[in-house]
Structure formats: structure tokens, C-alpha cells
Amino acid sequence: MKASDVLRDAVSVLKSSPAIDHWQRYKEEIEADELLAFVLDNDRVDPEEDIPADARRRFQRMVARRAQGEPVPLITGFSVFRGLEMIVRPGVFVPRDSTEYLAAQAVRRLRSRRRPIAVDLATGGGAVALAIANEVPRARVFGTDISARAVSIARTNADGLRLHATFVRGDLFGGLPRTLVEQVDVVTLHPPYVARGQLRELPEEIRRFEPVHTLTDRSVDGLGLIERAATESPTWLRLGGWLLVEVSPDRSRSVASVMRRKGFQEVRSTMDRGFKLTRVLVGRWRG
Image (cartoon, rainbow, N blue to C red; front, side, top):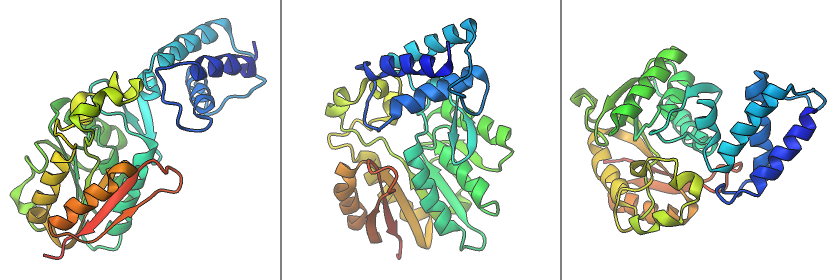
């Protein structure tokens, strides 16, 4: 069978799956192509290429796993984030393309500073922190996470990419050296913001395969961790430093309200034109 025929069958399977959130146009085609390229160990798939039977069977097994909701990065074991290939393992939140915009917003603010310091809270596998370290080499970058497994994977990613970033286990700013007090230029956070009563409403591919603590802080409104971050960040930020928080559009107003109430200025909601389903709320600490 040619690749085009194999891909057509796979796309049909994925499109009919109730476990997949079909929000993105051509999502199924993109994922099928990505999985087949992985099986063939190629950068891209030639539609006219003949696919050997053993490769076809392996590909079909992967498509079946995806049709059950398992994210592609968990199937392949890696994800590419702002050009960096990162290890992905169960038990740690899978980095999304949409979060690249959070990293971009941080990089833009750090590049103009002489000796910048960045802290990525709830860092997971370290995607945002390592993207910053890669694009602003002179920056001192720290990542924190409450999960020991996440910190371990983040450190493995840093070693594999030969990037310098410090990852520590801690609840938000817990574990950071006190020498960073009032020295941080940018704090980034992609928080668990799903209200505890809304977990069952999440797509199956998220609800079944992402750790619960990366989805919700168990608060009634989902703003508990965001409130804490906005409260604690001024202790660590230098004057003129920024807090950047990634959320879904329906939470942007409430998060902006929290940030203003905690004393942040220049608060606004920014949107990546490529991914209109997320927002990055930005706020500046003026003291």
C-alpha cells in the first residue's frame, strides 16, 4: 500500500474517534502524518512511497492508541517545542504548541535586559524554561514543579539539549534560592485552572492522560493557584518585572482581575493569532 492510502485510512479512524478533541482543522491529517513519519524514521512522508507490511502494522497500532485518546507525544515519546525535541513521559503534562506563545512573550521581555533572570512555575518537563534558555543564552533560568517526576524529566531534557537551566522541586516559588528575591525579570505560569467541578467536562484525551494536579488546583473557581502566584510573585520580581499567565479565553477576564487586585499594572490579555484558544495575561510589577 502507498503512504497516501495508509494515511487516508488512519485519518478516517481518527476522525471517528469520540476520545479525541477535534477542535483543530486538519488535526487528524497532521497527527497521522506525524505518526507515519515517526514509524518510517523520516522527516516527512512521500505520499507515493510504498509502506512495508511491518511498518504498516506498527503504524496502525499507534493510530489505534491515538484513537483511544492517547496524545501523540506519549506515543512517540517526544515533542518538539520551539524547535527543541523534548522527552515526554506519562505522569507529566504534555507540552502543547499553543504554549509556545507563552515562551515567546517571555523571550521578548528578557532579550532587552542585560543579565535577565526567569522563573517558570509549574514547569512540567521544562519546555518553557528550556525554550527561554535556548533563545536567551545569557539568562539565568529556573523552573519549579511540585512533582519530583516532572523535575527529573526537565533535568533530563536540559542535559540532552545541553541547555543551562536549574530545576527544583517546590510548590510555586518553593525551592528557589532566596538570593532571587526582588531579582527576577519574568515569571511564567501555565497553571492548572480547571474548576474542580468541571473536570468531567474535559475532552477524554486530556482527562484520561494528563495528571490531575496539572489540570486543577481543586479550587471552586480554578483560580486558587493563580491567586497565590499573583500574591507571591511581587516578593521575587524586580521593579518593572513581568508576570505572564497562560489561560483559556473564558478565564482571561477573571485572571486579569486577580492580577490587578494584587497590584500589577499594564495588565492585558494577549493572543497568539495562530492559536486563538489560549491567552497570555501579562502584568507588570511597579511596586
